[in-house]
Image 1 (cartoon, rainbow, N blue to C red):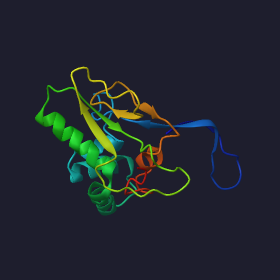
Image 2 (image 1 turned 90 degrees about the horizontal axis):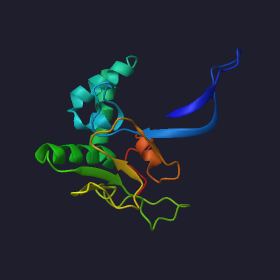
Image 3 (image 1 turned 60 degrees about the vertical axis):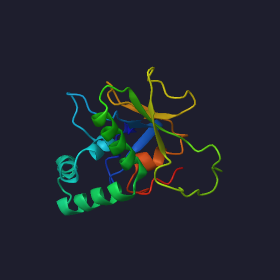
Image 4 (image 1 turned 30 degrees about the vertical axis):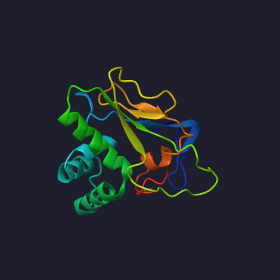
Amino acid sequence: MRAEIKAPPRTGPYSFHIHGQIYHMISPLYSNERKKPGYGQLYIFDSSEASNRRMENNQACLQSVMEKLDALLRSINPFAESYLQMHQLIQSNPAVNVKMVFMEHPDLYLRRYNAPTSRTNVAAIFVGDDGEPPANRDICIYPVADSYKNISPLNQCNDPMVYPLLFPNGECC
């Protein structure tokens, strides 16, 4: 998350004020040498290694709770499953140019809850010589990139991708 944050007042409980737009970011599948893996990148590691990496930034949390949350998300979250599938595809076919695209469902009525019909219908992995996904898709995960990319605040998958503990089933598509 990225935003302009105003300093809290000197008295009262801690709070912060955000001015302007809040930007949510998404990472490539693999981190570069300068950055530690985080967020969706951790789903390609085994559960214990991913939990250990999460504990580096959350030392006040219990490791057992972190491991249970990791196991839960791996079992029910379609985004976690998609990251792992993309990693496995790249490992089995390293010469293939691959991109993963999270697609919005065009038939959803945005003013009501639309439960996902299956866990595998939120992402598509495109393989091609030119490496370009169809032009009408929104969130694209590349295997390697120099920086994180902004997620459109209007995308249906924004909240489930950014807040997986609030939307563990990936309730967007």
